Image 1 (cartoon, rainbow over the protein chains, first blue to last red):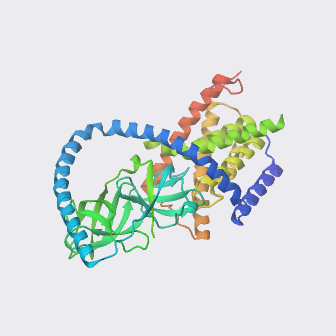
Image 2 (tube, each protein chain N blue to C red):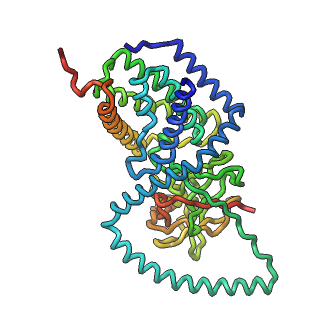
Image 3 (cartoon, chains in turn blue, green):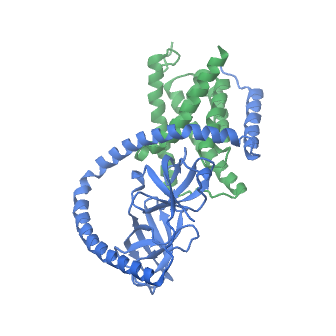
Length: 268
Length: 177
């Protein structure tokens, strides 16, 4: 019969307290960094394997709605082609004007590419945070934007260790980003995650007009997040006449479940 | 011989922590909630004794704390407290090694672990002035329930796997002689 051993439990308890104490005074840091660096490739591989299962599972689930979505997307692509063409004309005009006025062109931002090695935590049921295999030694710091392959902002760095970092996804309620609507009014607001699925843009003045389909971009008001990074499109507008503000539901352009590689923008 | 045993256990602890952090967290839908590390530790407690399980707890808890961004000590303290309480239940109530005992221990172990990890994580975040994501809304409780169900299911599978490979476990129903 198993007996309760108070002395043993007290000894182990003391060992645990000692370990935690050694961590907080920094003595364990070299060992932790070494362990993290050695484990990163294995974590990346494991996450890739489970991502494969996740994508296959999600693909099976979404098959029934894919046909309708394809139809809508085709129509959207056509509209975007036209818009792209107009934007290219504007870009050329802009460049010409800059040349004439001899503006200095802005420096290109630096990127650090990183693999996602984990989602959430052991006890996280939401997966609204990701762990990436790059950290302070790669130039990453808190507040830097995390973007997908197409340059769409998917989150923000919230904590950094030597070789790994944690980022909150845009659908995370703790992830707040200063944004602007790409419309005539250039309406500004704060975008924050809701329910782990969508983004809500809050504090929009009642006098401003926003409509479904408007593109939401970063406003550039945050120090480390440049202007112009696309977050998503307006899916719904909630406007009550007796409220001080209106809010909009923003659908992210990138499904967080599809992410395996991201980039972190390093500001100059 | 003793060195080989320590090395083997260390490697297994590292594999467990890596699988929990890297593989399970990326699984689709429900399955990402599965707490494999807790289930394995409970099995080790029952099969290998308190001493071995506490060593595994220190190793697993430390690695989980290193790989996560929750305040260091959240997983360590939570696992130690959970194992101690589950050991108490094992000694005084669920003394046999039947499936029901395992399921009951997993049930209570999961509840206690979630309680400790959320509370300790929250309070350590307050002390260290870090962001805490603890929001006790419907999604939180749904997530906890999913994890509990998955842990029980995982215990069921592991129990039968052990039963197939070892004679140390009793069958589902206790036989009265």
